[in-house]
Amino acid sequence: MYRSLLLLLALALGGLSSVRAELTIEVTGGVEGAQPIAVVPFGAAQGLAPPVDVAAVIAADLARTGRFRAMPTREMLTTPHRPEQVDLREWRLLGINSLVIGEVVPGSLAGFQINSVLFDVFSGDQLAALSMPASAAGMRLAAHRLADAIYEELTGQQGVFSTRIAYVTVEAEGDGRRTTLRVADADGHNPQTTVSSREPIMSPAWTPDGRRLAYVSFENGRSNIYLQELASGRRELLASYRGINGSPAFSPDGNRLAMTLSKDGNAEIYVLDLITRELRRLTDHYAIDTEPAFSPDGNTIVFTSDRGGQPQIYRVSSAGGTAERVTFRNDYNARASFAPDGRSLALVTRVDGRFRIARLDLVRNDLQLLSGGPLDESPSFAPNGSMIIYATRHNGRGVLAATSVDGSVTQRLSQEASEVREPAWSPFVE
Amino acid sequence: MDRSVRTVLSIALIALVLGGCGTTPKPPKAPETSSPAHGAMTAGIDSDQALQPAPWENPTSPIYRRVIYFGYDRSDIPSEYVPLLRTHADWLARHPDNRVTIEGHTDERGTREYNLALGDQRANAVRRFLIAEGVREAQLDTLSYGEEKPSSPGQGESSWSRNRRAELDYQGG
Image: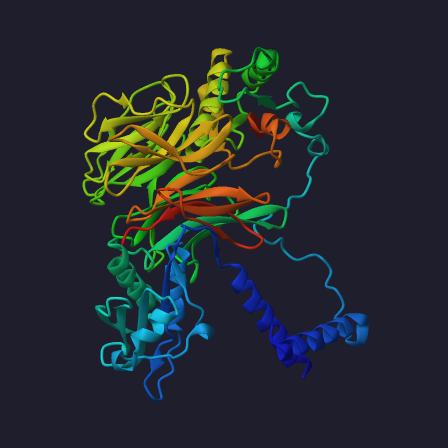
């Protein structure tokens, strides 16, 4: 009896700690007039017990964007699962613009199949009929993919609900700290540990296929760059030169890695050809050159340099050549990365002593501040360019925040009892 | 939390407390002769000399002070630290078997990778100074932690000024 109670206690506590290791997302600001949408709880074929509430996942995904207001289930008058059960007049009276219904049926491919239909309530049109195979373990991902398709149908923009986020957490451990690089679904669920160490871990960077992460780890006592395959955990030591090895960033085709090394005396940008293993130096200046990022066409690299006396963003051809300055407003601009369309940069800028996230429109040369600071850093674009995730502080603790690129929608992502920092949004994953 | 789970938890907690009150006899504690865990090292002291702290750990030694501090976003050595670094250079020149790792650190402001490079610049500034003062290159190593290992965890200038530093980490010869 005593032993089984202890076991229960251990299970209960274990369950609690696994909940704590998850990122929780709060929407902290939304657009005026979010679109009302109803995602009706999905039906299930007789004898089938789907392990995931697919409708709840879709509704939460859409609501988190701040662009949709999901109707609470208890306010629904009926719960249709198939088109012939839908009476659109009823949803019109409830003031709903879009309606999602669906059901989970046995599937030959993966065990389950999810069928879903999206209605425009006012026109009466079926906007989309979606069908997706899913295994029990893959049902959350299938739900995110359905949400992606619904979002794209309603907004014209590809959804990012099925993408992932890499981030670093820091927790007290004994007299020291434990640093962990994690990868979670874009809604914070399903966090997986990539690497964990008593020494610092920094600067996660996705390969363009979304299967591997490069990162900086001090586990050998110095900053080294590793490349790790997420599925297998296998990894390779990519750079362990004398001095610093930092700022890994992949070219869009995944064949080249830009990074910062100080092996030749001070921090310079180098490009490693991952196929030939040829290492080429790109910058040559006694000032700090670091934080390289490729343009989406792979032809340009932007980087941070204090060659003008203070950190500013410069650009150089990825084949080498003369660097030209990109930023002129504010006395500190750093850690730039390109939007997926290549027309703007996300960066950290200092205004009145506060480090804030900003977006620099490269076409109109217009700098738009997106966060308040004072210690915001590590901006990373969502792969559809709609949002920027970054690290900030809230109530004295490191948390992540995400903002739409127009600043109208904001979210906070935090993990209880942990510092969270250095988010990197994954590319689209097949 | 579900009520039944809560009840089970309270019962389990009571059981734990009761257990802790000594109703279950504990096995006698083993004498602590086991090998050290987690890679800790133990060593016997084989001479009286070993009782003396290393010069860099002895508060009366001229090389006991081993940290120099920098201005914001600066890596030039402030003039007030020149005498201290000369003392270290003299000592290292007279002790060619000793090595020192110069650790460069920054405060938390600014981006992490820029700070990693700034910490590297600070460590290298100290290294160049020591070499100019006659220390052999083979005695010196540099290591930047950027902003990752603050010595003062707080925010505000009083913490930041203590975190913008280079530390001389001596190894025995």
